[in-house]
Image 1 (spheres, helix red, strand yellow):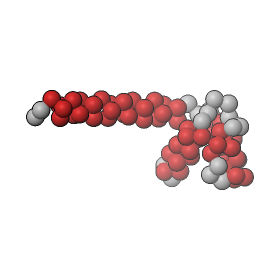
Image 2: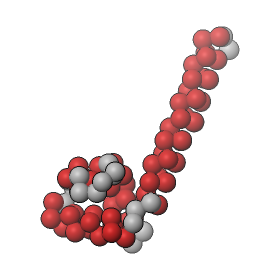
Image 3: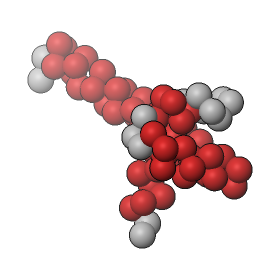
Image 4: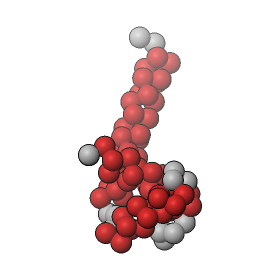
Amino acid sequence: MDNSSRSQDKKSKANDRQEAKEVNSTAQHFVDFTEAEEDIVLRMHRLVRNRWDLIAGRIPGRTAEEVEMFWTRKHQEK
């Protein structure tokens, strides 16, 4: 294996670890949804469906991605 192949392999492994950290940190946000936030998500979803940006705009500190992840996770459990 030449140096360029080793370098690319190391970069690939580093990228994989970074992506895993990002997924884990995002998953932690899911756990932090309060009952009040869940209620807002459920009520807003009835009104605007999958417009996550609009729903997130009603919950201070939440992103559209976090709200969508919450919704997806919540409905996979059923």
